[in-house]
Length: 274
Image (cartoon, rainbow, N blue to C red; front, side, top):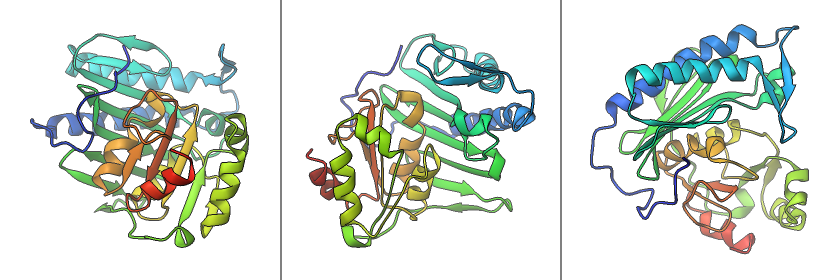
């Protein structure tokens, strides 16, 4: 089971208490960090190629198992949807996990990868945790609870998107030129790069978190699955930003994503022809 588009606005208040769910998501991230870091940059790391030509490592599998084991013990009636082991369970509450987002970086010993953990309730992403242990960073958020980060020195602080209101002052990030070109949108990317102050392809989870911290104003991707983006949604919304697909719809299954500081969202949509 993957979450169907919800009739509920993603910014709608949640009628319930997410405190325990957020606390569990943070403990899931702790467990994932321990497992993933054990094999990071290991010279004998086992790497295989999946049917879709992407890579999977022994660490991807072990990390997802660790998360699933803890969920089975603490949330046995909740559903789980993970990149490596698919879907188990059913119901209105679904945990969506990507054990290692950025496997290509992980297997190369590049520290820009993350574990993504989210709780989707009735189709709406309500809890999100992004943990990047190789650089000792973590971000989290839940509906009504704000967006937060823990820095490498252990300091925890609340984060907010930027107040940049002009495209000419905006800094944007994209996954890759090849990705946009494959979607027939290379000209869109070039037009964006000419309209903004700065463009960089930071890649994977990190640029979304930079946006939530107010360091970027735009992140967009194509070919993304639910487990690639669900954890980002509560963090970006709670930090003051907006998150939709490339056409402006609030859904996880559209195979595209557009996150902004909120102020410039409609203007960016206009530039992309939405």
